[in-house]
Length: 302
Image (cartoon, rainbow, N blue to C red; front, side):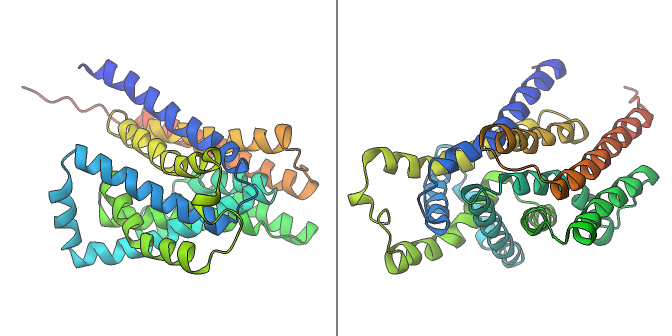
């Protein structure tokens, strides 16, 4: 397969991943009458089972055994499992409590937060326009706090948990599939204890649910795993600098769903913060394109 074909496949996988992430709120809205913690437990259990099947088909168990014997990596993955579990819970709670607009804002903020985390923890240096972009985003949040007396708690929590999760996963250097399997493995006992020991709702017993509802709950594994695998497929076929420009598809779709289809109010405080964040992202993207074009082409002589 030549480079052009790989790039086309990469674009297809990237679009598939971010479109699925963008439309995921529709699925979780369908589970709106179920406790978010209960949904998270199903998401963990069904993702774990699906990932186990994929690992078995791909004959990845020796790599999992090696990974489980590495104490340092397991400590990192315990931390990332807590972070991703928290992120999932906040996201589902936000969707089912009419805060999808805040969730959208959180994932718009995330790329800018990643730049700051890279600077603080990975000694990465910010370029001038990146500093301006981060400053604009900060001003947007401060204005919401100072003039309107509100803090975008949900947005900051989502961006923070996912940003730190990404930072730790970068440090541990584990494949997406293997890493998510270990993370769900760590969370499975918590999910089982909650479902069989504490959950006391009309939907907590699968035997009492309709087939339709049980299928919806089982689909949580696909909703979690499939976009991640598409993202991994894209990352191996295209440049990360190019892949980064696809990341705005998800929050943009969430924004449209929230304002057009679910009727969430686009209040002045949110509008102000969004305008500053969008301005920051335009600068951030422009800087990425400009810096990418300036890179010298390396010619390797045979």
